[in-house]
Image 1 (cartoon, helix red, strand yellow):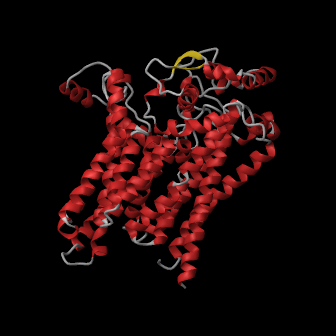
Image 2: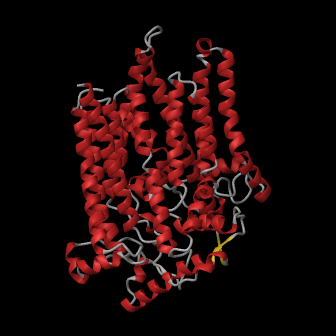
Image 3: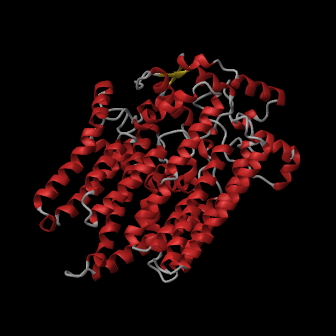
Length: 552
């Protein structure tokens, strides 16, 4: 029986992990070049480090190659004001004659390789990003720098998908630590793998994939430290240091680090004060030693630890910031944050029906109520002298809440800064996938607080699959092949199956190959699509089977 249990757990985890890779590969192949959020600017950062062997500064420009590529490839709707004509959005690109589109595609492939070393005129605005990801990826770029631009983009996308997939086994370890039940660990992994917007953040060239893995590892090390495995405390500090030189939002993890240190320090009598003090010091010293140089460099370059986005563009006091905060349309801001976390079609800012978002809002609310109920009941059960495993869940949940809640507070601050600096009361919900392991574990914990929680969790995974099927086949593919476009008011036109007769299935497959790698044939696209559908449909069945399996 023990071997059967272990065999199922291993099989289920591999199945979910494989599903993640299949889905990520499909998105990497389906999505047009530069359609990922800020993808071309992240690519420009990697290219700059690889070619010039130095980090960018505020006045660094992108390469001449990228500047020309942006003129030739269809661009995201979100760039229509940032890059005006001769740049073309997908909406305008598919109105061009077929021979003109073909010429542009050939010209993209014919851009001279030595243009990578020549500077264009556009600023490399993502040069503000913390540098770890770009420093790690630049050696790979030097290996592939002589292949075509679409090939380079696709290879880097594949790297990000492989890196992001590490979240699955880490999530399993985190959930098993919290629930002491491998079945629930499988369910948490299935829930995370079912979230479609996660892949929008994971496949694109950029640092979110590394940040997501580091944040997940940080979560695991914090939980292990609270369990009494103190060797993980310095590892949590090291991971935090790596995180804050990967993305600046890693600073939001500092409160959780403080909470962990407090928990560990309260056990000093058990483990000995010298050991605890040494470990606490290591946990706080490691991030400083790893990341201080980057923030000192920023102060020297621009006068602040962070280039921009983290403070008002014009000097103002705390009283003025507080006054501006009262004028923010917070409801609109949080709706944008949640909506773009559930599903937002890349940099063209595609969306689905508003009622679909409401369904997930309701489930999140139910999970929050259940989480409060579960935490309160567990706290009441904590009695001095009980075995450790009887009383660790409240601590574990508080660590997860500190990690997730700290990130949400950072997102709230981002809404405020966007309102002050840009007049836009919104933030990017896809950022929250950095803490998806904490989020997924908390959602499952909250829903399982109810008697019917297992059914709701499986239903939630199924709803994500249905959302993904609709969004992919009725929004993404029609938009990326020119079947639908934005209306004059900015709204996206609806797609109807009868529109397939306008260009035919063969032409749709041909358009999906535009500016892609040479081996992205119609047969490959159909094969990847088949894997994508099969992988998506597998996830709710794996979760249901896990709940029926014997407890492990």
